[in-house]
Amino acid sequence: MVTSLPFLMQNMILKTEPSSFWKLVFSILICESTGIVSSLISQAAMNSWFAALAKPSWNPPSYLFAPVWTSLYLLMAIALWLVWKSSAPHLQKKRALSLFAIQLFLNFWWSIIFFKFHSPLFAFVDIVLMNIFIILTIFNFATISRLAAWLLVPYISWVFFASLLNYTIWRLN
Image (tube, rainbow, N blue to C red):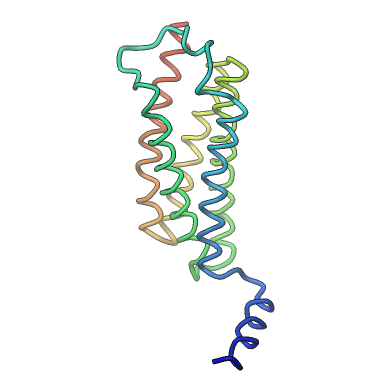
């Protein structure tokens, strides 16, 4: 047992590709931190500007957003991990992961545009693009892992709902 420890450590150090476990950890960190950092920058939870806006009657209560987004980011992370760890051809994975990165980038900016810059119109443009890239990501993930694609369905559903909410708030104000 003792003699195999240096061999295992050497094997881990020489590997250029992170293990599946580390890919999962990194996937969770990148997805969850996207939401956390964006929220901290936008200060969405403490936004008096948003509180004063006219909202539709079907606007969800504010306490619902944090647990919903935390869950969605976790599902996104697992989907990312499934694709990243797959044995799909490099170019196929690169395309799928690039689309995922673009939609995550748009996701990051939405809260900042909406809450920090007080711009429901530009946030709506961002979220429409986000919808497009999430759909492209889902279709590309499906060619690699059907489960990964299905894990993004709650996310696109919520973002579509958020798009309608964003549009309605923009029109009401």
